[in-house]
Length: 414
Image 1 (cartoon, rainbow, N blue to C red):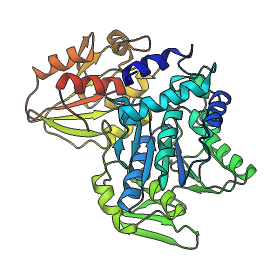
Image 2 (cartoon, rainbow, N blue to C red; image 1 turned 30 degrees about the vertical axis):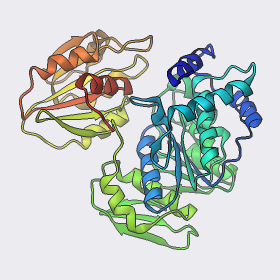
Image 3 (cartoon, helix red, strand yellow; image 1 turned 135 degrees about the horizontal axis):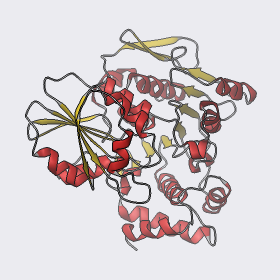
């Protein structure tokens, strides 16, 4: 079977899109003899900032001369984006071979889509034996498929209210789930500003060395600082701000690599200045007009997106589409004083939110024009006819929104 056929097949193998738990995937991983992984392993959990942190880890390690394997989710345009070795996307043939091996090994075990794809990534990584494997948690941490792998260093980027149906409706409850990636005697880095107290309690209980942003590592007055691997002294380098993927994300990536002996201080500034992730605060010029794409879909991520936008002389228009399980009113609030024209687009599928629902979620604020569209492509077509050269377009709210807009514009975000 070709890759598209495999993906269609594994989407239907399990009756639920999400079923948290490690028993099924652990059994199949054992049959395939996938664990433990070779080399060093970093697992990245958190509400926001995971993708940027993973990208910085990968690019810093490769710039220092180490081989890497990276697993992320979801993908933006192609499934292959989820599995990368030394910066290159896994090819269709390798993925199909991995899926075939999983299909044979699982026998009558029903795996979810994410479990299937996680195992496929591990099969491919086993074939390459990288110096460093970087795994991004899909949902939560404790019961996420990625958590079958023991990390040498774990990172929690931030804790926010998202996926509350699965993880709990308080920051403490969500923190317990995300802190499930911790391992005894292996460092856990917390990169956020405010850490729920339960994380420190769990680390103390399980003898997990906890390192916090602003204490052992972080960013201060134009300098990045971190602890050496033996924690005997603090190191620092001057680094020009703003860092496109976030000063906080850079600090945790540098600290994690330093702990593993995989950091070359000489490459930090160059990587910080040039590292990008498709669809994350991505600025592009299209027909002389600035378009900014961001896959952010919750209040914390979108507040950060707004804070890092430069001022312009023209008007800002927003093309937004969101999934129905996202807190649209809180997420859209930071844009109220900025956006003069809303292009609200419905997203298809059972999880998609309609344009009418988005209109109801728009918070009160300065009067702005609001138009509704049946899909992202229609919104793109309409707004392109009304733009002036000094205007700016913000496209955000979901991976689906950014991907569909890129397709409608016939552009590549890579």
